[in-house]
Image (cartoon, rainbow, N blue to C red; front, side, top):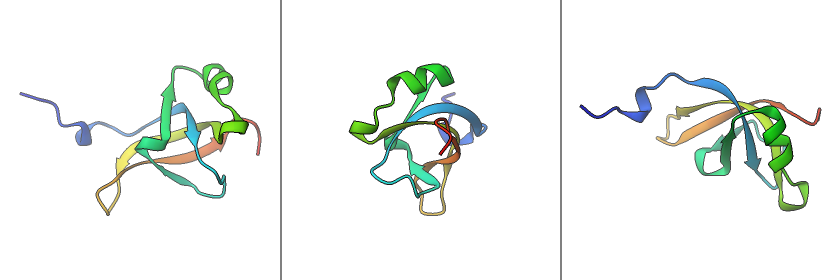
Length: 78
């Protein structure tokens, strides 16, 4: 039996988010790269390339059918 990825429990994790604007609070799955630690997310982030370290919750399926991550906090304090 194959696991359905949409039935997994949503969890908090560290990630690098690609976004030109940090005003949003939710991000599509293709803009989020989960990392193993906060330190790794901070190291991989690059403001010059619109990618920022964050702690996120997800992925979860939206009402529109997209898989989304929800921002918990930016790791640089903003």
